[in-house]
Image 1: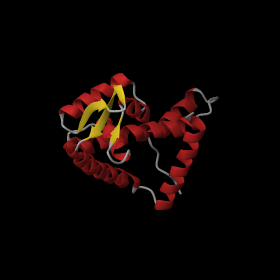
Image 2: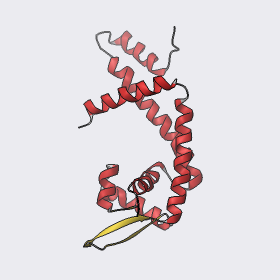
Image 3: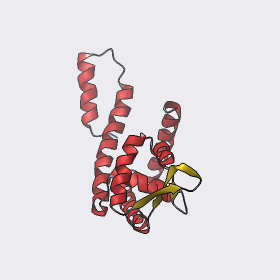
Image 4: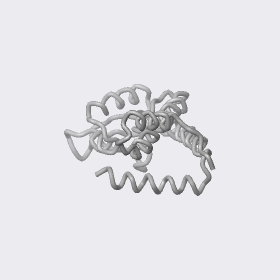
Length: 165
């Protein structure tokens, strides 16, 4: 069965013409991964926009939600979970706190520390936004048969396991 050509195929063809000595198999995979990540990132931004949050802000709220009751983490825990600097985290927390989606308070176990807690409004917004985001992802994944999606998930897991240390 002939597969359609995509922009990555065109790039690979161009490299084959000008540098036939190159092995571009990795580019075939990662070129598509990067393009898919960008396209899905754009779709997710649009899915979260009606809730007044960005993807990065969604990630903060989701980390608090996944922490379970009482939906509280320290800024350091959030930074580690989201792989952000504390400076990058501060901006997100400031915006989300102004919007009433989380609150910061002194850590009762550490006089120097803070804790970040999801508010009831934050919980409501997050629970609606996560549904919208998953619907968008499911819509995109519908291009594959369920067994293809499962196989792809396994391949990506293996690739990440061998790459991210």
